[in-house]
Amino acid sequence: MAKVLMRASLVAVSLVWVLAAQTVLAAEVKRYVVEGSRAAELDSCVEPTERMRRMHFEFIKHQRISTVHEGIRGTKYSLAGCVECHISYEEQQPQPIDRPDQFCGACHAYAAVDLNCFDCHASVPNGGGLDAEAQAAHRAAGVEKLVQSGRNGEGH
Image 1: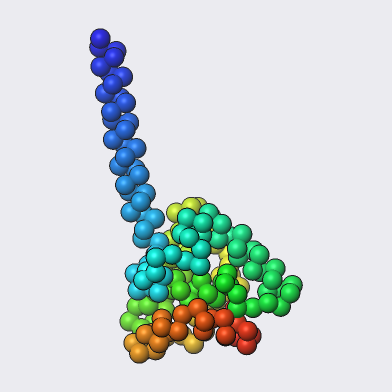
Image 2: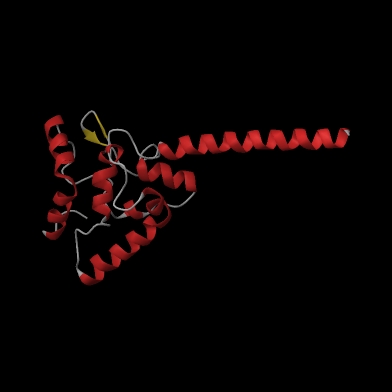
């Protein structure tokens, strides 16, 4: 009887730990969409959220091939598009997206994955800081602005 009671207690404690861990992980995952970014205002990315979490690297690799080898810029999966949408601003200055408390940096640190995109690519949009009016226009312009600037050879 004592063994059964002990096993039941261990199972109950284990379940409590699993539920607590899932709650903490859910809170951790939500923080990767940084407040103050355009992405925080959207329901999903260019693909459903779960698909982006699982496959974003494949999308970026495919985009790299299209851009570097075929000269196609400004498509749906451009790195510049990721930065434009997921970057946040503090005191009207864009914060580098690869910082440990920002979108790419936080998620890659959590997953223990090396983040080397920004060894070569800009971690903030070209043009530096924006005033409040420019930030609002920037958010309103959305992806269409990115597509147009990519076709003109601007940005990364």
